[in-house]
Image (cartoon, rainbow, N blue to C red; front, side, top):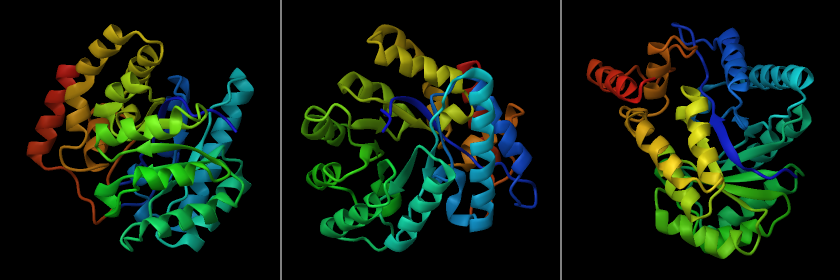
Length: 301
């Protein structure tokens, strides 16, 4: 199993004006990320609008990203890890999605807390226990704001003992919880990675001993986000702090009217392949667009 570390992009799904997936745009986006030297890619995540993608679209996206990664590796000798989203509020589907990713050659899967059902902590543990049996490395995704239930640190301690669990994407928004996760799990198991799920909290997490970020903003500025993370991982915190504050306006604006509507707007403004969003998401308002334009200018992007 690989050590999860650095800057991983939570990938958007480029779409055409009619809401169809822009597969060629997706291919271009992957190439842009790989050429920028990103540490890893995370397709079929929340930012990918996965709740509105059908399984054939997902299958084709996995096929494209695995093919582009293979071509890049042959050309450069660099293996860029791919973590495929495999979350569901149906445990059987999460297992099936993890099996699909494993068969495709993914390095790991990202498995979110079951949403809407609001399972107990015991139910959450059983969910991850079932997925862990697939035999592919698993990154736990804890984001109460989207799932309705937080994974208590005591529960995560037990999940981390399961086979194939390699880390957590921490998007609780609580620095206190992040510290508890590091203190109670990572300090006892250095191979367990704690990744930020919030661009704006990446630097604080790195200072506390975290391992990097699964980033939304790196869709737009992979090199800039990676420079910040690399500096933090190397202990160059004055440099990392400067990079953080230079990007802070876009860290905020990228969520001004939700994700991924806001980051797609920013990418479209910079001529990057993003396109529209699929309903029930809608394009950002004129006010949101002006806020994003201002942030881009302030960040010199």
